[in-house]
Image (cartoon, rainbow, N blue to C red; front, side, top):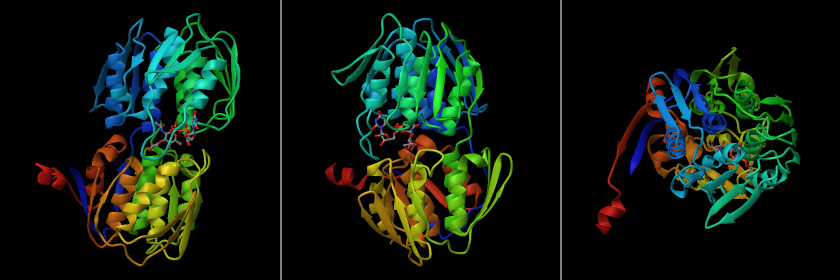
Length: 429
Ligand code: EPU
């Protein structure tokens, strides 16, 4: 059992640089499938999910060269990539589903294992399916695989998403770049990561207008070419450090981020009593002695991101007064609350809502991470709590946070990473 052990209370103080966004780079890697030849990505985070996506691309016939020291990736895509993404990789990383759009557009066929639900809830694919059908693909599910076929190529369509899904927007956008005619996708997601992929596609020769708005117009081209692209900074990792600073009464400068991407988050941290300074590509977050409870509803961008919701619960747990959180995207995200109560948090969950009554002090305890963000939020809560908190399920944190323990150490945390035998295994032999 891998663990991260922290000793609190310790304020986070200093400077930390965030790498490129996980939720962008994985899609940018998939988008390289749209063009034969060698694409380069820069500002690539050194995280497990990038390795999983690299392996998936290798199995599709690509050559993937990750230069960790230079934070760059070179992906050489063959003239005829494979079309099958196997269950063993897709189940390890749900974002694998984003190879669907590029493969069906470029190869006329894609067989991608259905990822199933995960720790944060059931996660539908109906909008991916319906959109691809509107683009002229035949889609069906067979033996656990999502199969999309368009042997004569895709055609243009006028699509309206029921909900601004990040994944559906990305898959349909990528697929539409190689169709004939002009495709309109209305009610698309507007996350900075969507703008990033639009920019990369434009650099590859795609014709896209409406970038950053909720209506994209894509005029298909017959061929795209490889490009050299720098990944947008990770606003969720930056937000995690900002919450860490406020929860611990610390003072942290976060570099490598556009503060505009965190507008909703920084506004809420100011409500909690933090002092925020914004520069062109950095933020300074100075926490109060004790934060005040805040009210947050998660929403698609530019609303408050669901990925930072566990941090809001953790902050409210030690805040003065009562906080309220409404989770509108992933019902399973409350699983983490159970672990937080082990630190002494007083949380009552009712449907989409959680009421949190702040306590004077949390107290360290062993806890388990169930997903990436829950894991990082538990570590931050542990830093603010009295005594030792041991967080297991560290593999989740490694999926999305580069050099997490090193950064914590640089910011003054008393932290140790290790591996201990599973006591249940020991009993069962
Ligand atoms: N949904 C459907 N049908 C669909 C697509 C989505 O019902 O066809 C529902 C989902 O079940 C969910 C909601 O719509 O309730 C939002 O899903 P969305 O498609 O927007 O999310 P995603 O693409 O699966 C990405 C991020 C998540 C992030 C969400 C929301 C990646 C790899 N993942 O997921 O990030 O929470 O957008 O912003 O980009 C994380 O990084 O920890 C993480 C979970």
